[in-house]
Amino acid sequence: MTKLNNTFFLFIIIALEGYIILSAELLAIRQTIPFVGNGTDSVSVIIAAVLMPLAVGYHSGGQFKIKNSKGQFRSIRKKLLSNVVIASAFLLPALSYFVFQFFFIGLDAMGVENNIAKVAIYCLVFLVTPIYLLGQTIPLISNYFSKAKLSTITGRMLFISTMGSFTGSLLTTLILMGTIGVHHTVTLLFVMLLVLVLILGKKQTRDTTMVMLAIVGFSAMLNSDAVMETLNIVKNNKYSTIMVMEIDDDGGAPHLFINNNDSSMYSKNGRKHPYIEFGEQITIKSIPKDALPKNILIIGAGGFTFGHNDLKNNYTYLDIDKDLKEVSEEYLLKEKLQKNKTFYPIPARAYLARTDKKFDIILLDAYLGGLSIPEHLVTQEFFFEIKSHLNDKAILIANFITSPNFNNLFSKNIDNTIRSVFPYLSRHAPDNKQDIWSQDPTKSANYMYIYKHYADIDAGSIYTDNAE
Image (cartoon, rainbow, N blue to C red; front, side, top):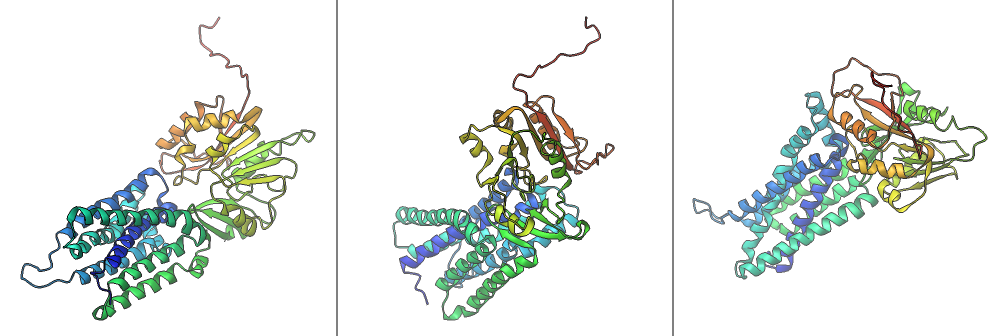
């Protein structure tokens, strides 16, 4: 039994509360990316769904009275314990990929298509209640400091809670997700909740402790490597949920899925996604045989299939996820990258900013469908950076998942933006499925923009009826 008048244990509880809330928020953001994307709009909804119930929890916890309106005694310890266990029961399905994937599948089946609506429903069902309950921790714990000076102890509690949050933010993303994986980081969160229960528990609350132990056990099972394997998940790090599945329609060829997007495929006979084959056909395979080796930059490495088996030209692959190379070599290509291929696991704009190297071919393929669109890689400024790294007569090809007939805002905006930087740009459907009559704003397909760079291009003129 822990004596809660021990200052050390009280501050441990406060620190753990800060760690758990921040870690849960980051895990919720990361785990929902495959279903609602990583845009600032969906992230802001999750942040709001943490901050508001946290604030309400602070207020509610401060209103707690040891004696109710009937004069009956209410234990602060039991209140804290019940809050932790109930919060854990909500967080278990909220953060366990195996469980909450069915929730998003269900939303799709119900016709909920808007991603903001999806993440809002997810937050209301799973996040609001546990954050509200955990938010009551600090004001409830403050009852044990009744003899302390209010300003001094309030500042100290907020400091300890913030340090816990600070530790949670750094440890969760920078260390744990990248080393033990997101799924094991989830289980570690429940271990932290168990530690809270153990600190708060006593002989009369053994049943509560057993319930918490059961929740930790379920978390360990649902987030185990064995369950990840059944879901075809081979890596689950801070950037991506990476799955490899053999698709019967492609003769059992392995497909690499990054955050639920079919990013790459590579069959035994070397067949790839149509847009990759299309890009190779108009760039690599059209290079004259007597030409010198070309320098080729691929932004968005995917499965490293673009240019695979080309031993002549020099390739530079960029991607923020360092695990992609290992996964692709083991599960997709099933061989090491050739010596003429170099991989840099760094952000594209960071690489471009620190090098003056120019390229003969640049493939821009960093957009995972309509969900995961890196906002910093669709701006006019970024496209100007790309342009500055093109040799004279170099070729840029950019792959986007857009509307066939510009039926949505993103398709219009990306077309306007890229054309503002690259004149005389052509747009192609690699699989020749234009569907020109569609009015569906959600319908999308691969479209490749192709641009040939001339250092001193003649802008030409405009034809008019009264031209002399």
